[in-house]
Length: 91
Image 1 (tube, rainbow, N blue to C red):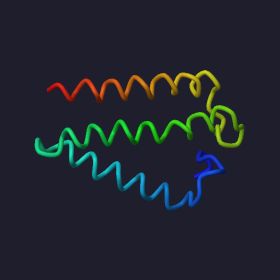
Image 2 (image 1 turned 60 degrees about the vertical axis):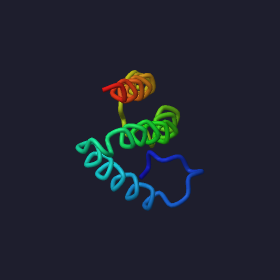
Image 3 (image 1 turned 120 degrees about the vertical axis):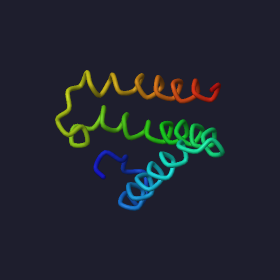
Image 4 (image 1 turned 30 degrees about the vertical axis):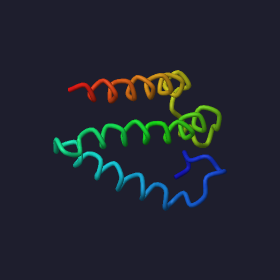
């Protein structure tokens, strides 16, 4: 919960909701009828996770001792994962 920026309300609820969403989206990927929806949902979720990555980069307590280069590398990786998900919409 400490990786969430302070301006977001209800950290505990947000963590629970995101965890449930990840499970539901993962299951939705398994079915052709819901695959495309799940891919779009993954891209949206990855977008929503960006503030947490920036917060970890600029907040020592939130960084949990992770090396600065790893925290920096996570940001472009997030965009690469979004592109990778988008790429699967073609198949």
